[in-house]
Length: 146
Image 1 (cartoon, rainbow, N blue to C red):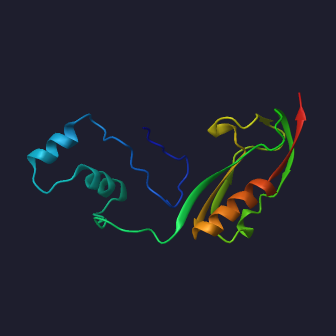
Image 2 (cartoon, helix red, strand yellow):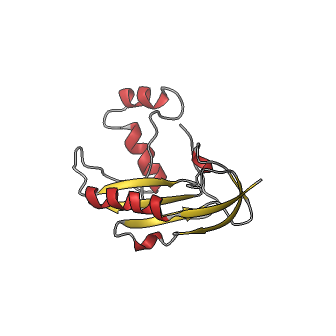
Image 3 (tube, rainbow, N blue to C red):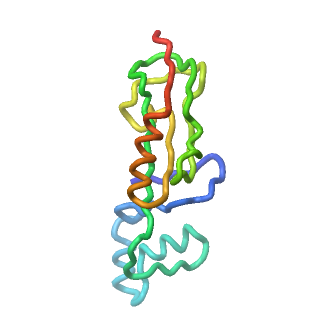
């Protein structure tokens, strides 16, 4: 997949492990040659900077969701204003990022970077579902068409 290097430090809330290891089949071949060495665990250890032991199986006790907040005006143009970015009002709120700025161009929301904001929610499944709808419905943008 890809490597994401943020331009500023953020406490990680989730580590994405790609569907494949870097280096082709080298990690898989090494695991066959070195008993007890597991390439995916080694990748997590390297990322964290210390050994992390993940249980062989577990059941999450909470639901986590990355919510894309759309340009609900359905117009492209210059962003005049927005309201509803007080996402911390949501019971399952974890964090958020608004990436479109007043006075700058905004597109219709069709691809990941065309969404004006993102919210990360963590909580019980029903609350996360409710908060997803509330976050999207409550974020209102005003766009001046060009």
